[in-house]
Structure formats: C-alpha cells, structure tokens
Amino acid sequence: MESFSIGEVKKTSRSLQIVELFKNALAEGKFKIGDKLPPERELAEMMGAGRSSLREAISILSAYGIVEARQGEGTFITDKFVENVFDFLGFTNVANIQNFVDLMQMREVFEAGSVKHILANLTPEDLDILEYYTERFENATSHEEKAEFDVKFHEHLIQCTRNPLLIRVYTMSLKLLFSLIDQLFLHNEVQASALNHHRTIIAALRTGDAEKSRNAIVTHLEDVSGFIRKYDTHDG
Image (cartoon, rainbow, N blue to C red; front, side, top):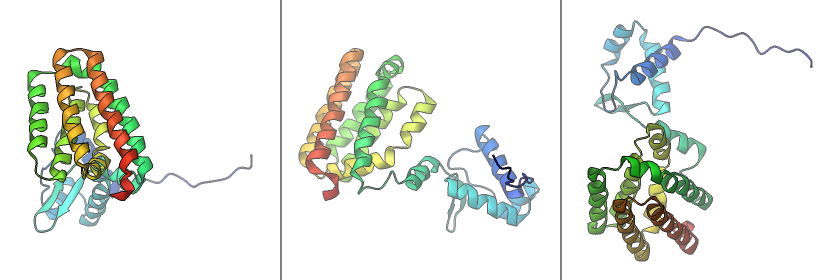
C-alpha cells in the first residue's frame, strides 16, 4: 500500500477541554438537569478560560443537547442529547412509515423482552403509577392528551426494569413514539383498543405471571402495528 499522511494530532483546543470538563462534571453529579449555569463572565473566571473559548464550548454543548440557552433567563443544563441524535438521523420524520414499523419491532424487543426484569423489580407504587396513567388516559379530552399518557404508560413500564442503560436507550424513541401515537389516536377505535390493552397489561402484571404479562404486551403491540397498516400514518 502506498504510504500517505493524514497529518499530526494537535493539542486539544481550549473549547474542547471545557466540553470535557462539563462531561466529567455531569458524570460526577455536579450538575443536574434543570440547573442554571452562572453568568458567562463568572463561569469563565471559575474555569480559568477565555470567554470566546467558553462561548464555543457552550455552542458545542448546545448542539449536543446538553445545555439550552433561554432568552432572558440564562443557560440551563438539559437532557436533549438522545432527542437530537434521533432528529439528526431522521428517525423523527413522521412522514416515514418505515420508521414506525421499525419502532414497533424495537418496542416488542424492549417491552416484551423486559418482562422478567419488570416483574423482578415491580412495586405496588409502580402499579399505582400505571393505573394513574391509565385513568388520565381514559379521562383525557383530546387525542394529544391521550397520546401523552399512552407514552408515559409505556415509558414507566421500561423504568420498572431499574436498568439505567435500557431506560436511556428506550428514551431515545419517545419523540418518535409520540408522533406515531398522536396520529393513530385520531381514530377512536385505536384509543379504545389501547385503553383496554393497558388494563389487561396491568392485570397481568398484578398476577406476577411472566408469560401472561408478555402475551398482554405483545398482543397490544401487534394491534398497534395492525392499526399502522390500516390507517397508514401518511394520511395523518
């Protein structure tokens, strides 16, 4: 193979060093979601950095979805990284029905495949939360509200695994999931089906029977997949 050169590795820029410091601070719990950062001048002095380097670092962190600048309020620690990744990769394109089909396959792997772990960690409080979201779903007056509580129901199912990595990865799909459910819930029969399935899932979880619980989740997801084919979400 002919030799070639791609250049030498240069010293890391000041702005990337600042990004790394923020990364470490988040990992160590020094920052929490919702925390407001000090004013730019104060933060630059605290870190021994120039304000231009700090601004560049904040721009990088903002692109990652780690911080968010709010007009007239300041800059806050946020948690939009996974959402930004999905946006960048095109997975939140609501016109792409293939994304929805792929999403349903992923949900079956995650939700039905996690039943053993869900049951191992399930508490009475978890069941109360699932019941609460189901009641809010039933009493919601708009399809958008119903979609919101449907998504919260399934999000909490995964949270019951107590597996931070699993929860984090599933969270990446929530924006796409809401886009799907919001469209499907324009149809009353989809709302009614989801409500009945949620009740069936809760009843199965209460028995502690893994096979029954898994079947309840799979049946629900298969019905949703059927509605995707029936109504074709391109029609909105």
